[in-house]
Image 1: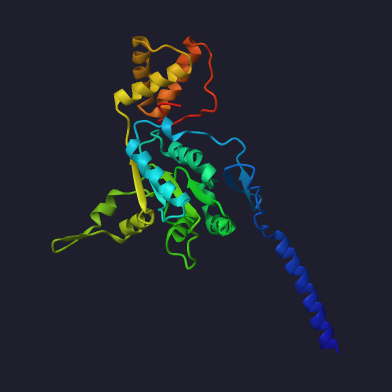
Image 2: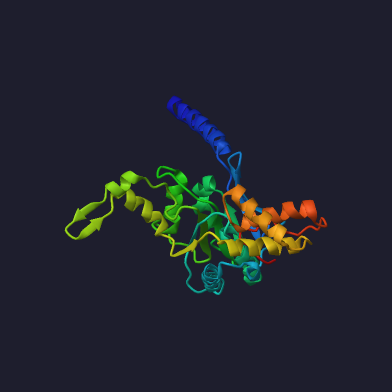
Length: 304
């Protein structure tokens, strides 16, 4: 009888302890309001994840993007396949800063949102929740792009391993209504060092990469489509700057062109973003004060 009483007391204390532990664990993500927006942002606050609607998504039209026609065609075709239910690839967009990588992802959302496409932005440090996000979306009728902007990793980061697993290699099958689009200034998403080149081995006529290099390449190779972006030349840069001057209600002139070139020299870049920033400055000093509605740092957009 005493042993039975002790056991009951022990079980009661165990139940109380489990209740306290469960209270400390993060609650599962609450279902979002899917009708609130076409774009969402995954946030983990105080240990509790949530998929929050973006009430004013950045609208960019595909027709507005210039100077990146080949890249635009690749992304548009891949996304069209995806929203129509055909096979499509995860995409890695890499290359020079300010050339339209992020704007192109936003543009395909704007183009295909009426066909059921939705975008979910996930910060790098929240990628450890990637499997939870995919599970949350699996039964939805919409098609989702998980957007990871400006990625770079160290090999030991948990987010790196989570992304690698979801892309290809997890025991669970990938959901057919989810793709990952990521942008990075690094083609292999990880820092590369001179020593890794020295570690390559020659075997007869063959060259074999070191294990470290193979590990770094293995992540980027899990993206089925690689799209590279390149710096604009001077002509493209001036075209972009001239267009934005017109959008801000200013006339183009030899003076504005010369000033645009000097502006680029001070910034060390002839990118679409720099051209847009120049036009804002010039319009603020010389223009009518006209505002360009719903445009933010367009990164390579020549026309709105």
